[in-house]
Image (cartoon, rainbow, N blue to C red; front, side):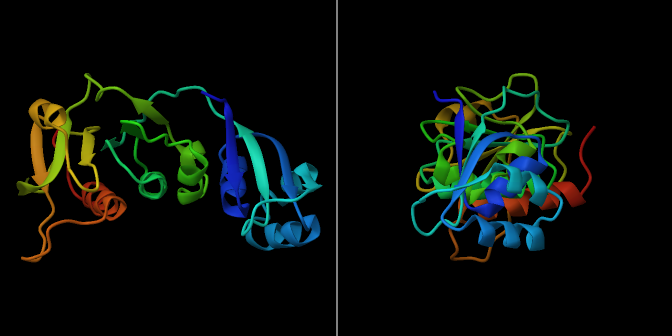
Amino acid sequence: MSNDVVLEGLHPLKHALRFGASVSRAVAPDPGAVLALARELAPDVADRIAALLEQGEVREPFDVVAWARRPAPRELGDGPVVLLDGPRRLGNVGAAVRVAAAAGAGGVLVRGDADPWHPAAVRGAAGLQFALPVERVDAAPADRALVAVDPAGEPLGEIPAGAVLAFGAERHGLSAEIRDRADLTVGLPMRPGVSSLNLATAVAAVLYVVRLGPTRA
């Protein structure tokens, strides 16, 4: 597995720098235009972007592409941890990471083949993989409560503090392994006739219910 992370666009580069990434290089067809936009949208890191920028061709439609060092595995935080169980679409993985970072989650774990550090996932997360622990794993952590999120679960309410919240794949849902291991299965109430939510939307809704509501000690 390569230690290089490809950052496609200004927003991933901006967030990578804000959250401590080691960025080695950035290229843009028009460095002046990129820097002007950075000074408008991200003045806190604009000088660092200026020091990195070189002129070079990038694939459309990106205005800038950069390369950063993938961080070493980090310890999960105290907040709820998102576990994506066999996701298929890298864009959904990235969007879930972006929501998890915004909601103050303790990390994002991915089971299956999807690489949460793939350029498409990094683009979908706007580079916020650098804001919290993000790793591919073989199994859910054994030292935290495991909460399965499924439409057939009991209404979402209190959950154990720091629990792992498991979300199933876009088409097939949660694996039998996660269902069998779960300490609790919860679901979001939905209008009759609506069978499911987009993966990233489900992650957003559950995280903010958990963030705003009480948790079990």
